[in-house]
Image (cartoon, rainbow, N blue to C red; front, side, top):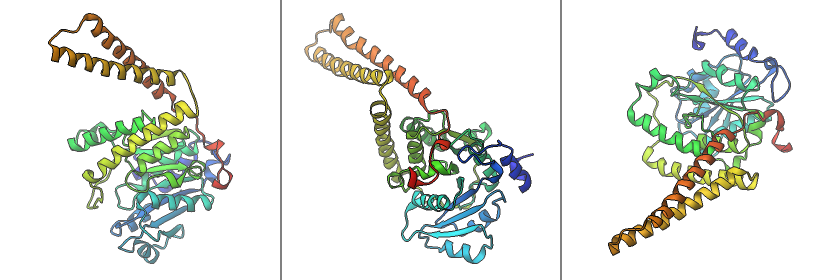
Amino acid sequence: MSLESTAPGARLALIHNADTSLAMTGESASQARIAVVIPSYKVTRHILSVLARIGPEVSAIYVVDDCCPEQSGALVEQECGDPRVKVLRNPVNLGVGGAVMTGYRAAIADGCDCIVKIDGDGQMKPELLPRFVAPILSGTADYTKGNRFYHIEDVVTMPRVRLFGNAVLSFMNKMSSGYWRVFDPTNGYTAISAPLAASLPYEKISNRYFFESDMLFRVGLMQAVVEDVPMRAVYGDEQSNLRITRILPQFLKGHLRNLMKRIGYEYFLRDFSVASIELVLGCALVLFALIFGTTEWWKSVTRQIPASSGTVMLAALPLILGVQFLLSFLAYDIRARGQTVISKRLPKTPDTR
C-alpha cells in the first residue's frame, strides 16, 4: 500500500513508530509538534486544496503571504476553517527563502519540534510528509529533502534538458555544500529540526531562488546530517516564476562563493588537517605545472626548438603529483561530512545559541 493512500491514522502511526525517542527534546515522537510552512505567492488556485490534504499528524500550519498580489493570505483566512492554520504576512516580497524563514521563526516561537516546508502550488504531496519527518524524529537526520530523481522510471521520462540542468546544479551544489551524496538540490520539499532551524544565521541566507542550495551550504557548515527522501513530482497547471537564463549566473556566483567559504571555514579556520596540506600542495603544483608548461610550450613553438625531456618532465611531474593530491583531498572531503545528528546538541531557541 502506498503512503498516499494510507489513512491519516496510519500515517500518524508511521511517524510515532519511527523511534521511541525524539533526538532534540528527549520526548516521545508521539508528543512531537510538527509544523508546516507554506510560502504563498500567486498560488490561490491550489493553496486551499493543499491545506485540506495536510494530515492530523501536523500541529500547526503557517501560511506566509509574501506580499502576494492575489491576496492569498486573505483567501485562506476567509475560506479555510482549519484551526491549525495561521496566516503570516510579509510587508514586502522577500522571496521564497524570506517567506520560509518567517514561518520558521513563528514555528520556533510556538515550540514546534520539526518544521516541514511545502509549496502552495500543488506540486508537492502533503501525504508524503511522514517520510520527511520520520528521520528527524527518530534521530537519524537533522534535515531532509526530496529527491525527484530517485526512481529510474521517472528519470528516463524527463526531458534531457531538465536532466542535464539538474545534474550540473547538483554537481555545483555537492562542491559548495560538501554533501556529495545528496541530489536534486533545488527541491523545495524539506523538513528541519527546530533546534537546527533556530541556529541558522537567517540574515546570511539567500531569500530568493538560491534559498534551497544556500540552506544546504549553511547546514553543512554546522555538520548537520542531511537525508534524501525519494518522491515523485506532480506537474499541473501551475506557473513557475523561475527563468533559467536569469538565475543561472546567480547560481554560478553563489556556488563559487559558498565553495570558497566552505573550504576556508572547514579546512583552515575551524580545522587544519592532512587534507588541508593536500589541497595547498595540489593547487600549488598544478598551478606551477600549467604556468611553466604553457610558457615552455610557447617558447618551443615560437623558436621552433623542441623542448628537452627534462623540461617536459619538469612540467608533467608536478601536474601528476598535483592531481593526485587534489584527488586525495576530494576523497577526504567526500568522507568528511558529519554522520552524527547535531540537533540534540543545539539549543531549541535562538536566544541561547
